[in-house]
Amino acid sequence: MRLYNTLTRKKEEFIPIKQDRVTMYVCGPTVYNYIHVGNARPLVVFDVLRRYLEYKNYTVDYLVNFTDIDDKLINKANEEGATVKEIAEKFIGEYLKDAKGLLLKEESTNHPRATEHITEIIGFIKELVDKGYAYSVNGDVYFDVTKLDEYGKLSKKNIEDLISGARVEVNEIKRNPIDFTLWKAAKPGEPSWDSPWGKGRPGWHIECSVMARLYLGDTIDIHAGGEDLQFPHHENEIAQSESLTEKPFANYWLHNAMINVENQKMSKSLMNFFTVREISKEFDLEVLRFFILSAHYRKPVNFSREFVEQAKNGLDRLYNGKNNLEYLMDNCKEKALNDKDNKIKEEITELKKKFIDSMEDDINTADAISALFEMVKEGNTKLSQDSPRELVIFIHDILTELSGILGILNKENELLDEEIAELIDKRMEARKNKDFKLADQIRDTLKEKGIILEDTKDGVKWKRVR
Image 1 (cartoon, rainbow, N blue to C red):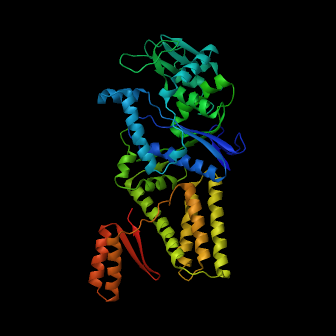
Image 2 (image 1 turned 135 degrees about the vertical axis):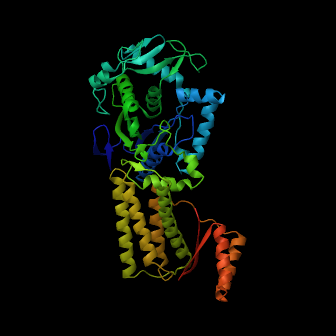
Image 3 (image 1 turned 30 degrees about the vertical axis):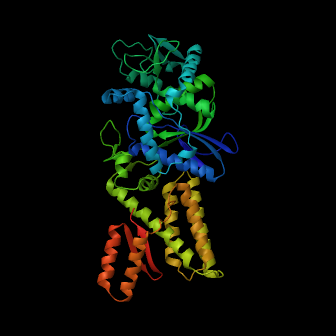
């Protein structure tokens, strides 16, 4: 498997530290508001990478942190007349609701919080101070970036250029304008903790270094997030972690491109964002997941409701193909495969290879999805109730296996309730009696209930409108 490593700017063969285990850290949300669609992209993309690694029989230690102490949380708490803890608890709960809708594997995801690791954060910072990489001024602690020859190696930025281009604030107390904060001295009314430098709270970057080391080790296999985190966040994580441990922080750095609105990055600061919760009012969030995976993760994507509608139609095509296979499994015959059937099996096997090859090539979900569409087309055009059941099961099982890697097509057909079942029976009877007016009325009634009927040569099939 080859992954594009931002650190080296090239695709590299993925070789984990341990033969059968992968450690993976994905930068999670600052929990002061609902997550927006741009936040959802890394969560979905790297959830798929985790699923694929598990498909390859790796055990994946997967961590997505919650930043639950930050200026944004403090401001939100002041706006709402609540505590920072109350705001964090509220939006962690809302995140988990959205995560469920996006079909993320929450049951095997570790979500450590910054405020639960203050002791470890203080210990980490103290070691950096003792080693001469950090210094304290008036209760603040800063990391001295000039101590590192390789600062900027991830983002490919040059220290001298950064320093010369930095804005120097009035009464600047840092040694260098680009030194970053490890610990912030307490301000009136803000949450704070005791430390060797006085009461205060952690800076943003330090929590990820501390929690990655605590749960995953000094060196982890994969660190991932949005490309906007390359600098300064991930660059600063590397600086503080590698200064402390004198080991590589992560062997593979993966970054997804942004989701844009009218070619501008979707962000709360630009007020051009759509929350996942807003989208869920119009679409099943599996549609949003499918939209995100329909493009390669390193390519920017323009977001619009029109594009999400297109994704919905594509996902419906796949579901209809899967439902068709399940219908045939219940209605086709047990008989031996002939040469034509074996040829179809070979074609499906080739499409499975295409899917796997796409995933092996830097998790190219866009090409993987095209293989699923071709598979569904094969089933729709070449199978009927006269097909051998063995062949239908073969295609259905492969489609289910591969779509599971993407985390889609896992919703079972819901059973029709008695009222709907009776209406379908009445419509069939009306058509048999050539009462087409009544048959059309029943079709319209079912449509209002979210049931779409399709008359095929193999009988009446139905699907629920998503």
